Image (tube, rainbow, N blue to C red; front, side, top):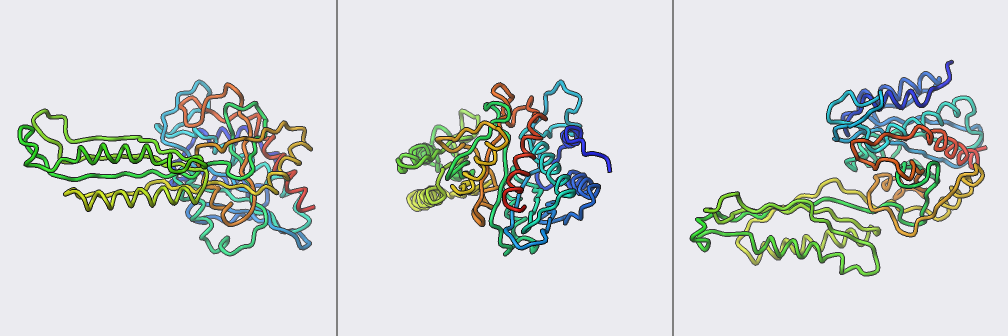
Length: 374
C-alpha cells in the first residue's frame, strides 16, 4: 500500500471545492482514500457525512475526532498551481487541510488501531451553514451513542505556525443572522401621510439592535448591522418598505437565546403599535462552542509532550463553529493551530491552507488518542 501523500491530497481537494450540502465528489474522494487504507467507512450520514470507527479489543472510552470539508462562495485569487477549478467557490477556510489531517490519523490507526475503547473519525459536510453537525448527530449511527471525548481543530491565521491555541470555556461564539422586513404602503413624496412609511420604525429598530449588547454588561455580545435598505431610489416616492439584516453574537448560549427573545419581543411590540406588516427570518444559527476544562488541560499536556508552543486565549474567538453541537452532547475541546503570523485571513480570496501544519494536527490527534486508548 502506497504511503498517503497528505499535501497532494489536500491540493486535490483544494482544486475541487464544493459548497455546503453539495459535497458529493469531496465525500467520494474521502471515502475512496479511507478504503485505500483498508478501512470500511460509513457514508451518507446526515447528507454527505462519513464516519470511520476503530474498535479496541478491551473496554474503554469513546473518542470522536471531527474534520469538516465544505468550501465557501468566494472567487479565488491565487498564484499557486492548485487553485480552484470551480469558479466562484474555494477552500477559503482550510477545510481541505482539516480533512487531510484527519485522513493521516486514519492511515495510522489502520496500521495501529486502538487497544482500548473506540475511536470515531468523523468527516462533516455543511459546517459553513451551521447544519452539518446537527444532521450527522441525528443519524442513527451517532444519535444516542455515548461519547466521552470530542476534539476538533481550526487553523488560525495571525498566530505563529504550529502554535496550539486553546481556551477553557467558550472558544468560539454563538451567532445567527436575522432578516427583518417592514412592509407599509408607498405614496407620492408630496403626500407622505397618504401612505404608511416604515422610516421611523426602521431607525428605531436599528438603534434597538445596536444598543442590545449593552443589556449584557458581564458577557461578550455583539450585534452588527450588515444590510439596510429603505424604499426605492426615486425622489417622488415616499417609502413603503424597508429591510434590516443583522448578525448577533455572544460567548454565552443563554445570553444568545435571550438576545433573540428580546428582538422578537421588540418586533411584536412594533407590529402592535404601527400599521406595518413585519416579517422576520433567522439564518445560519450557531451555538457557542464551549470547551471542557478537563479536555483543554489534556490537550495542553499532549501538545507540550510534542514540544508544541501553547497559547491560552483570554477571550473567545468571535466567529462561530458548528462543532458546538458535538460539545453540547459530549465533553471535549475545539482548539486552533496557528497558520502563521502573516498568513492570509480566513475567507479571503488569497487564502490557502499551510501544508506545514498537516502533520502538526495529525500528530496531536494521535497523541490524544494514544493517551486514552493504549
